[in-house]
Length: 105
Image (cartoon, rainbow, N blue to C red; front, side, top):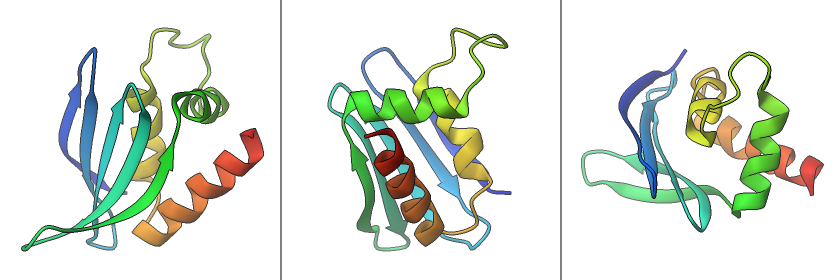
């Protein structure tokens, strides 16, 4: 299971940095334009975009991962992070979200 390094869930933007089991690090950013998930390679901070989606796609993916009866007020970041923590590598994150976006489109 991955590790949360940073978690910020604000009204206008939300961000989470995760260390995956593989040792790779990802940055999850949500804002009014949707979501961007980037692999960040330390120490130089090289970035590779893994996934990007608009707010509607993020909402559809989130609703498929979440039981609104248990916690109706969860934010998209609060829904997506537990899912992402279970994925072992950046490539699997990319494939899982690309497949999920195709399913909800």
